[in-house]
Image (cartoon, rainbow, N blue to C red; front, side, top):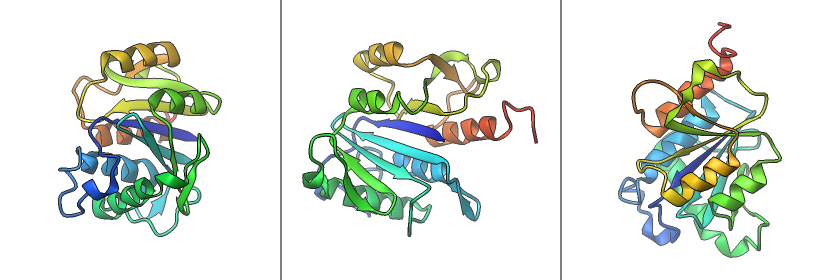
Length: 198
């Protein structure tokens, strides 16, 4: 299993604040939607061993589980509609128990810290950051959980949390990439066993 945690700093938690006619205007939800598409889809297929967790405003986490997803298409509008549906189901999320939104989509009342604590048992946590060690110098782990930020840098509090929670900080290359492009590079690194098998 490979997992991606994407921190959405400005994404509204009120579903009524998300317009499918202006997805970027909803705290750059468009970027998070592209991370979901890149994280779970292949060309004409799906990555069944992949999950993407969108942490919205450090309050709610929407999880897309590729193994059980149904009727999700890779375009931003379709993914944004599913995120909006998830946020609308927040009353059904009790404590840390998730609300089932649709097949393969869940909402939890968890911010970044609680999400990382929950996922720490599932695999090895890595922060993706431009100041990290080069990806090529690391060994691809069996069950990685990669944490990355949206169009904002991690806050000081988030950086402290990640420094304590993550096993290592990695960078995907010499240039700053969009978050969804970073997910694609990481997938390729894992698919090729660290760029050694094609």
